[in-house]
Image (cartoon, rainbow, N blue to C red):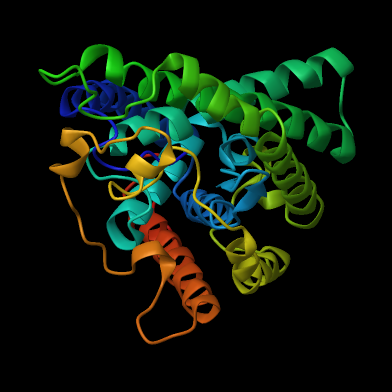
Length: 329
């Protein structure tokens, strides 16, 4: 679901980024009002869960892959406003350091995965909780899983629409698409087929299992019980286990739909490489595709996961968020 650069026109990217600016502003204000400074480091842990979840690629018959995002998970633990900031920071780190998702398309990726996904997922999960009167950990985890399934599919639909409108709006003199060449009749079925089935299930399982684990072993991570800046031992162990397990994400062969390189797009059915994609931005990240030069893929993947988690936790320890007048002790 990470939209690379040059799939969306610069105009589309500008509109999507402009749409996210007030969202980020509201979320920052809400977090400052609702969370104490001692709770902010927990956002780093939430962002780390999202970052790791996105490294576990899941294969789909036909050669494409997808992954969980974890936005609903964070929203259920710390609230949707905190989730938006957490996933946005994780996406920024992925784009800048690992080349996962575009620089110009950062605003669009945040709109889909940091705004639509956690808010729709959270609202759905809360509605399910009220409907079934879920009060047990198991019941709440199932509601969180259900909400996350709806949330990731809402995000996938938005992504598909952003892809699909490109050939309608941006063509060259010969009538060929300048950016993503697939219209809505192709992009929506292609994106939704995987997310309504395998990828949506992966999101639900990821969200439900981790939510249940965290609530049972580390209730301080829930907003209503928060009050410490320390990450509990069970959560640290879980993060460590996920870091060591990320090479399983390498077993999925193929590339996620809509994330091909410009040199691959002609072979995917388009029959040509759109000019805007061939001549667009080319950003070189430090650790492209979570790889480290000279190291085996699995080792590089683990090292990238450890670096990403460490950076996210440090960033949220340093961010000046939380209720004013408080400081992390």
